[in-house]
Amino acid sequence: MSEPQQLQRRLGTFDATAIGLGSMLGAGVFVVFAPAAGLAGSFLVLAVVVAGVVAYCNAVASAALAAKYPTSGGTYVYGRKQLGEWPGFIAGWGFVTGKTASCAAMALTFGSYVAPDYAVPVAVAAVVALTGVNLLGITRTALLTRILLCMVLATLVFVAVAAVLGPHPAAGTAGMQSGGLAGVLPAAGLMFFAFAGYARIATLGEEVRNPERAIPRAILAALAAAFAIYLLLAVLLLAHLGGRLSTSGTPLLDAVLDSRLAPAAPLVQAGAAAACLGALLALITGVGRTTLAMARERDLPGPLARVGGTHTVPFVAELAVAAVVILLLVTTNVMTVVGFSSFGVLVYYAVANAAAYTLAVHPNYAPRWLNAVGFAGCVVLAFTLPAAPVLTMAGVIAAGVAGRWLVLRVRQHQPSP
Image (cartoon, rainbow, N blue to C red; front, side):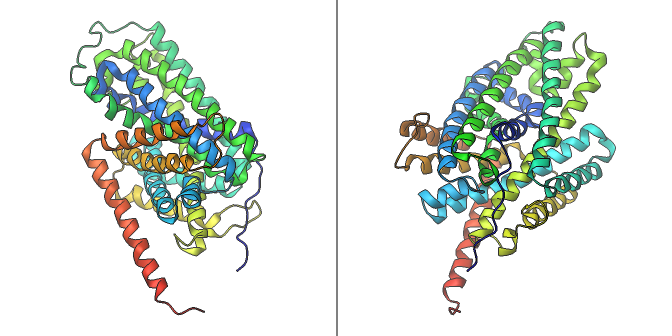
């Protein structure tokens, strides 16, 4: 059997950090605070801290594993290497299905900000355009991600300034009684949706130079920056919008509209559009690489493992992901996908923590006890999410497990060549 075609190492630490931070500061930061505030109320900041702690545990586990296995596929590969084929498959299947739906959500959010009356066609055009960028090679992806990330960071700084300068609502935190301490864990599960972008760094392990050193640094740097930004925004939005935060469909935009900087609100809309594009670009990249890894192991159809073209990209996997995302856009409403994606990603990281726990040698930044804390945190947050996304994603994972079992049974009964 011939060796699978390899991707090329073209990314440095800064590029990898930008891709991870660009993924985390995606559309989630513009929408996730409202539903999280609806659950946790004035305890929203605590929910951000809980999500950040679990994300840190997952990040150090991913960093340790990515340094040992610097190849495309992330936790799908780590699970297979450390725990066996089935845990690896569950991680990979949960990531691919959950994040493919998230791609559609990001695209549709972009369409809604840019042209609300033509959201779906604009979303489809965005998927096509960004898939074309990915096919031009990972260095083009990293360049566009850096440009979009700068726009998003500028937007978030503008929102923070507006919240500080603008008048505070007379009602204070009135209207938040529906949320409270009991809602902190479900809210943290939703907030985790916004933290999950550092997985994209691990899935790019085959394309990072000096991965044993660069990947851990990039993961931890991206997470630290995102955590600081989310914590600051949670404090400012609670103080500025009060009880209205939990009912706002566009909380960051509303924060500016309620301030003395309201005339510049279109800048926030442009920043939200850039965030959606940045997240969508990174998501398509990450899902394509995990699809590539699963196809290499015959857990997905073999042609998805093809790598080629002038820029050495997994073009079949990229095109397949784009096709599924477009199908979702034209047939399904995916705007309620946050909980669904959060459950899938928490399952993914539960496997990552379990895999890291079994490592023979643990780096100083990822002690074994922290892997146990991360595993427990993922399980708790996953099963405290609202019931509908939990049941939906559990059904999707069960369907994937059943399908793989049937394929393996068929292969066992096929005559050897």
